Length: 422
Image (cartoon, rainbow, N blue to C red):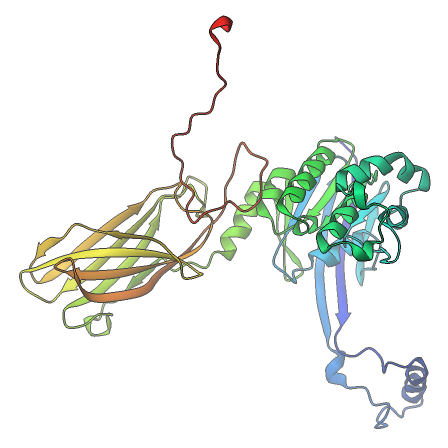
């Protein structure tokens, strides 16, 4: 078994909220002396106690990482992910607890730190490499590879103040990606650059992850990248570890917690049921056909919409329609049932949405009841809400999949065998 290279024990970090000073060093010293002499209520030096509240960014975080492991750290904004990485990188000290590590640490916490706008790309490569812990000889050995990775050969002697934001990011990550540290710590590095460059970054990170001697801590909101690159994961929630274990299980739990779903609505009191004198909606339900052991709706999951209505007319031709919208208000599809001659009473309907049809994203469903295939009787808007998570296999592409839908059509792709080869 490989040795432990990172040990975090009981880490907590407390920040003080509010103003930390007057803005003047002299006045800060005078305020300290004033408080020390018991004159803290002086109007000029008075410190607002309401601004001295404390915020606990991390709460008793403990874990161990072994050499060669790749860990993902997931959680919402403000969960404490970046604070944890800064503590492990020795940028800040924990309030309580400790971190012990073995080997050199390379941190990609803020791409482009230390770049000087007046200096050329060539000069900034050396400066950035030094700040990230590389020696001049290391930068010289990898200089051509760094420039080629960035794709900025033509602009390498141009001051970076003339770079576009994308060019700036490409050069900064190119330097950081060539660190030869034993432990590599990366925070949201995939949130930079264009899609093509993000793909290059992913390939480089995969190359590093495949090196059994390198240890990686990777923070990202890109769940597919975390699933692909990392074997273990930590889910941080409000500064504490919510769960820790195999990446696929942790990511599924985390994504499931984010899904804002409204799967079922029922009205037992007819007078309160939505509708009118012609028709009332008694129930509306979304039934996902989840895979065994899977609690998250993803693009593979078939969905069944079930509903019950009360028809309050006699001998009328009715049909129902389902409208699926994304949260941008775009209609993804409009599907209608066949018309049926109905007497007064209860009518049930059901529509199945196959798996491998919808793209990942948030959706809502509206139900419409129509008479004589042309007269809308009642439109029940946004009765069901659900989210579809992404899922990919047999690919290293993790950019956003284009399109409102994501069907799996029969698709033939194979090399041509010439007659002479038979």
